[in-house]
Image: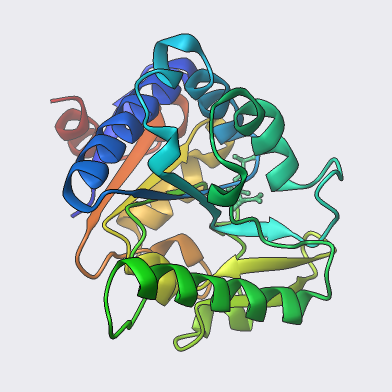
Length: 256
Ligand code: 6PG
């Protein structure tokens, strides 16, 4: 059963998420000398990134030993309005003392399949050098994920072959629903993480959140159900609006 935390509003979701990131960074750096986090795109995390850039939080993270990755990216240039990298750079990365070499962006400006292959090779180089001689999966300390109202997460969209990928860590595919090419971590790469944190807010997500958390297991239609860490912690941080359709018992347990 994943951990479910229901917060009053988007602001409190951002604060709880920021505190969790500070804590994950502290323990990862204490244990292994570095903290690896994969960011998500979309609107929900932007408030969180801006909060992490404030003096209150910026000073709590050892940025020199923090390494930034992405769970997915839109196949657009890094300065494009749709770029998840651009959003994170403007909201956070430009405001913290993070060495440029600690940022591993997905190259949305390149041919998608070669960009996905290059990103996977970059993960192999990074995680093999730091984590283990024989590498099965990249083991991020923390992966942030959002969830679309169609149940997609990262860029694993319903009824696409990306949902079924079990050997590659990174894939590129054209997504008809959003009429664009996307690059995404696959379910095996996501599920190898030490910790995965979903941030889901807004009434528009309430029906889908109930289906994902309490409905039948049908990950091809609800790719967020793919997220089941093999040996890690899964936390859902949701606001009351998104939690409004969850069973009362689940809401009581979450508020406990
Ligand atoms: C993206 C994401 C995507 C996002 C969901 C939720 O690049 O869009 O990675 O998976 O997390 O679409 O987006 P919102 O937070 O905007 O609802």
